[in-house]
Image (cartoon, rainbow, N blue to C red; front, side, top):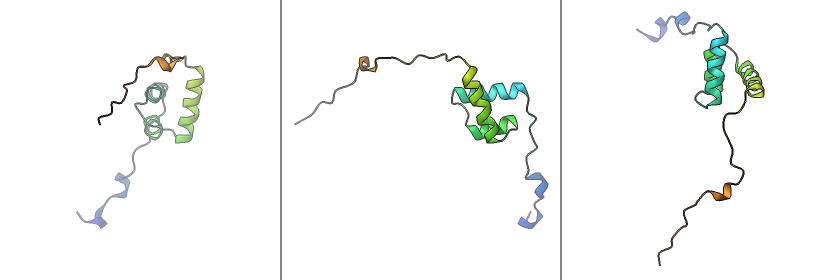
Length: 84
């Protein structure tokens, strides 16, 4: 098959229908950093801008389920040993 015989209609991916389930899956994957914004937008059938706005709303109303330690000085660090 030569370069001139390519069917251009097969190169375009079909549009994905935006459903609440797809949006929820994408938001959870973005929250856990398992998906990128372009991939999540494609998964939902949205533009990247729409996905960013949707994810921002998700973050606004989604309770955090992690803790950030207040005092990070307690974390033990390995001291460097110097050899002479």
